Length: 522
Image 1: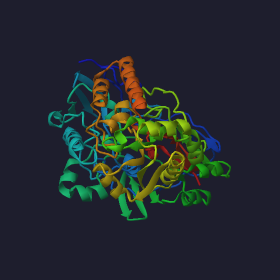
Image 2: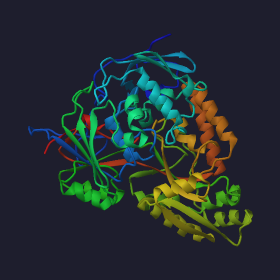
Image 3: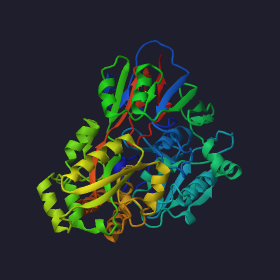
Image 4: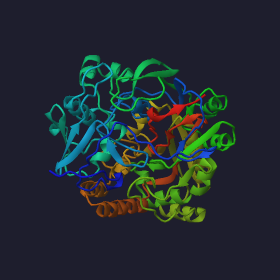
């Protein structure tokens, strides 16, 4: 059993162990002031820090249960409520959280040693039993089981009160990256069992720097500082999350000084807000990938010539500029350039005449009808309308059907979505996570049915050498690019707006920044 010093997250593939200690959950980094900052904000002066941090999200969380939701807004809130075995700093380095050290016992087993003196919000002690319970639950709960498909729930085991073994079904190089994600939160076993899943999801008991005080449906969630927190205490007492779905209205809250931090700033609002006094734009690369997906099990779309025609008919750079302005990068792969092992592919060429020729070769010289479905998202709706108009140029009639998120997911999972506008957020920052939506076992609108993709993913997951992993995932990205199973559109930046009095706020590529490090001056 061998111990090692900390390593970058991109080197998690190596068969290593990290030994470290420290009191802070997320160490800070350099800050960049200014109206158009990238990465963080800072403040100087002698004002007294405020007691409340006011944050605006673009939608209401479905719940705050790490294993039973799929919304980024849920993850944003739970980031402040829960701890994980390991976490990442703003540079992507794996750092201690509840575990102070860990080692790889064998190629399938990681052993974690827990810090002493950690208590949950209800005052009960956090032990290895809670860790084992949480990760077993993550492997079997509806919202997280596909994420933890490589973990072996039956053999996750308590060694002693402060030691737990986490086991995977086969060698899995991405283990630490997955455990550091929002899905890796550690829950209070006794609270879950006594409250039940639904009640726990509304008022969860975690061990993080904040605890839930109240939730007013349709309006706000109020968190209060956990004064018994094991790490550095936040500078403010109250953390308020409000929900505003309309992008323009979120921007107004910032302009009028009614919010300190606003998530999901739209591209047009970001351009304007960057020139507003006392407002700063914090933006940076994300793990997010926006794409148009073709149902791989749909008989019509199983025709590769047709998929190539539909791809060639879309002017992707013009679409991205129209929708995102300068806040997104045209996609050059099937996973974000922020993800380890990203490989740039040759650009998709916009060519209407070639598209018409391919359409004829596919057997649709007289055109065809397709249906695009998407959740009720204004950005996705705009993308769908642009695609609809571009496809019309080659004789393809596309109808657009937006729907409520729950309905969309139900239809997508049932294989009832022919073409989708969707996004994927690789919250772990690992290529296995980024590309898992194409697995034949995945449940989504793609309805993947190509076992060759599984072969690549299995090989990449079991390869512990960085160079070997990089090569495997490059080959998989090339394979997907050539097959045209979807149309990669863009890698949007994650963009926030803050008042200039906000200090210590750092952009997070997974859209789950740690707000416990923030101080706000008014």
